[in-house]
Amino acid sequence: MSEEESRTATGVLPEMKRRGEPIAMLTCYDFPTAVLQDASQVDVILVGDSVGINILGYESPQQVTMEDMLHHTRAVSRGVRNAILLADLPYRSYETDAQAVVNARQLADAGADMVKLEGAGEVAGRIGAITADGIPVVGHVGHLPQTWKGNRHVYGDRADEAARVLAGALALEAAGASAVVLECVPEQVAGVVSRALRIPTIGIGSGRRCDGQVLVAPDLLGLNDFSFRYSKRYAELGGTIRNAFARYVTDVKEKRYPAEEHRYRIRNEELRKFKALAEE
Image (cartoon, rainbow, N blue to C red; front, side, top):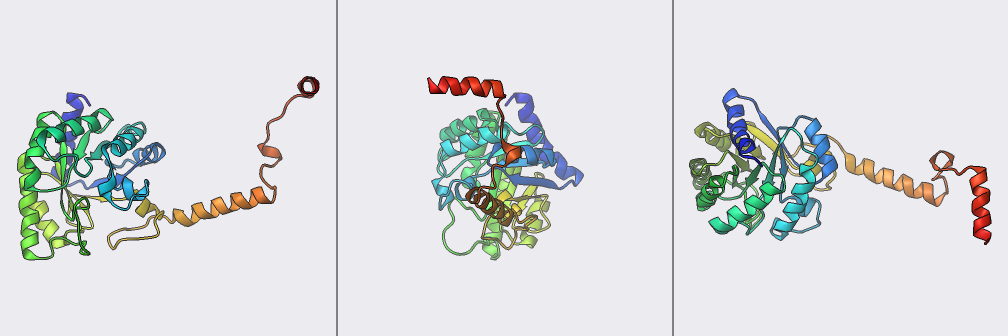
């Protein structure tokens, strides 16, 4: 990522907030999906550590490695031409300022325009170090999948938690973040936070008062059997894909595929020569 591209990524999202233009973000983990998302004029494409559960079959985002993130960031970057490409720093990849800079640089070299990390004041130093290296950063407060424990997904529905969300978001802005993801924060709290910040808030499960929204693409497409309160399904591709696979298997078993139109041919003269060679 060049210095000019870095400045552009840093400025675009706050400028969209200033204009009152909602920011549309989607997760992405592979090249063909990146091509389709980029053509849909999505503003930000996120290579999230949700790749672990949605693509790699992991049970937790804590299992996602830097190698996983680099592999998928490279794949997605090959399909992105216009959108901002944001990539997650995975669990335990930014425990010190030096480690955070090294790993953020790797993601930038893999094609990311910006990187995202979870936490509030405790990661302010990491944000300062990464931005000092010329890489824009997006923060993430509220529900934190990398360190979440227990059964409560909502964070901020208690006054002390809501105050921590606000203080954390302000700390991230002060540290140099270009935007903040608010995950599973009550809508009213997200509204207060959004008004308090100069940088945009990107909500997931945080209601209508954020400056933008992000959804996990497999949830949006209906590829997962599970669903969340905040998710909206725009397609039911899971059933469509299963049906297509089942029809293919049936056609093969009943010898309907391949058919006449699916074959390649050889000229009779070449076929005779081949048969002669085969007999030898």
